Length: 546
Image 1 (cartoon, one colour):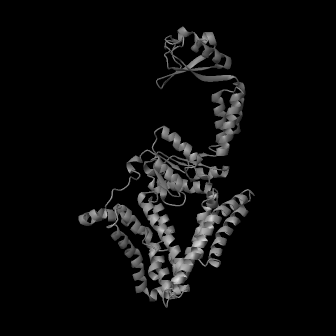
Image 2 (cartoon, rainbow, N blue to C red):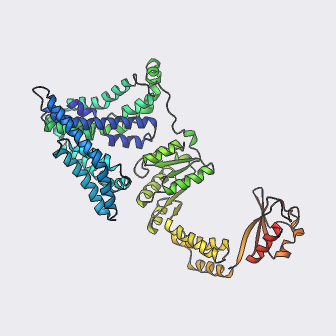
Image 3 (cartoon, rainbow, N blue to C red):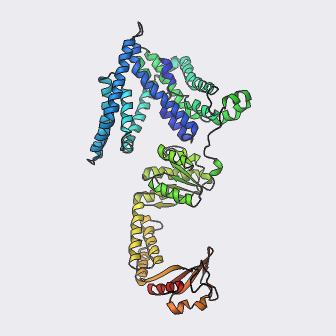
């Protein structure tokens, strides 16, 4: 029982460690997570079988074992055929009430009710019932909303879980049994890592994969406590032995973050043992994000609707990018498209430390939550004080807080949407384009409090708009068929015939302001003309030969 308890690592600790060291979305991190998921599933099965094993001290009772397995199978079958249809249907009905409180209560009732029903009716463990409830809810199209609503509960319970573990540790017992505590802790931290490395000699995987798995598994956590508690309840462990498990967990979880520091050391010195290394490193490492690609890149935090648009535009412009996202499905899609991506929560981990912000051109935070955006901006500014940072805010207060935290540009989507509506409205009323944009920019500066201008500027822009109504500056192309192609500006008599003035000309990407009268119009040129709407229409007719 003690061996089972100390063999199960903590998935929570593993995920946090991989996330903090930018390893979670690599092939090595995925192998470690897969290993831990299998451990969790097997732990649930062990919990199902423990009561039968404990009751068979006088001899193994195959009948009891068969009955236990049949009960577990019946529970799984009922949940598969009925639960997978009923629970998603129920959640959808509750969602239509548009009451978030009722929706959260329904989630908790399904999870806790399934766990209790599994225990009371079918005699299986609470852990198995909760596991199955989560698997069923994940099949609903509302699973993402469920995940968002229970996120705070998960964080609270995680904290309470580890606090309760700490409260169970008896310091006096630990001191009196320091030799046993040290032995168990070494077995967990060093022994489990050594076993994984030895397995690397048998399985054809890269050496780095087994080193990361070894480091990740060198700790024990939540299922160890559950197995230990079950062992105590069934009389298979004593209270002192359970205290040893708690002590080993406390030490291993504390030491585990420092174990990742050993990874580069191991990768440096182990190749010096050529016979061992050839046997240990039996496969070519799958391609990961190449550091040399992350130069002059733009870091986009979040790959939601806004992030996707930014990534699409930057890709079309051949700008190097790196996406930081905490949704595993989105990360998988980015990997399929060979877009560099890091999996993790940029607002609550060290993931940005692996984004090479010292070599980045800019960082864009698309996080809609202002608290998360504030932490992202603060962390990025600490890592690179000169990095241009563009962030998203939901409120006016959020704009000010993000600017104070170090964001160079803050965008409030509601305000920007209103200004865009304003632009189209004024343009449809024949106000000139340039002045419309300047007017919108004045409103934008006032709302964002960027060196808030006096109301006189707002008023003067308002007066200028009214005075220039119907006056426009536009760019007109010179086609090969244009009657003005090959003629000089003086020969075209464009101003005399239309009343519009030529103020600029663009040729081969080069801008010429106030072109001379001897400049010859060539096909492909774009001519900037200024005048009233009727004058611009006349100039356009001359250029196309109407």
